[in-house]
Image (cartoon, rainbow, N blue to C red; front, side, top):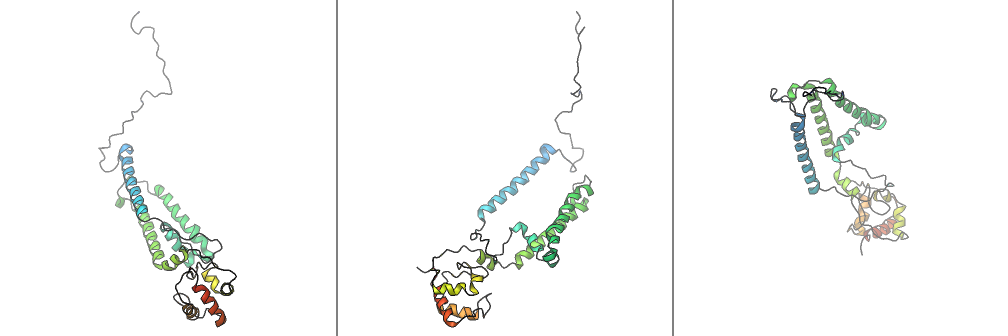
Length: 254
């Protein structure tokens, strides 16, 4: 029998006879305009991501997150503050057009428009050009977003009372005291407890444990005020004030 005579070849329609190889196309004809996704472009993305991740890890180790006192859901005087990357949203909600009855504008409408514009950019700009100055629409959107976020974050940092926030969130060592003492009963029956807390932990006012103040100093502050505390806060008798001042001055002392 002659070679090949009587043989039949059966083809599989699921396999293309002209299947392309896995070798990426040669993009040398278009220098600077496009490149192969694998491995050229993806390798660059990985390198940039690794650099940023390393930077974040270094910053995290060098400046760990500060801890505040234990959360107290009954403390209505505490003003929470978001992390730095949400400060621009925090500042936006302070403006009159985005707060109070218009809170939905600052919380939903403005962020929704920003995210929607970001999602529409690929459809509004279909150019294959990669240079920013050749793509005015997406470049303008990104510059506008960056300027808005930078400005709002800066305003939030400048206008926030950081000293007061630190005092509100400061970890105060708990002290033991006699809740049946006359000084504590006078304290709980006065307006002082609203600002300084039922455990003297502070709130709108400073903590009152281990102040180092003499009773006379506390009496003077109650009448004349100090710092952000206005004068004329005490409306009781001088005898009650003296009893309470002696009690407060001994808080935290062994």
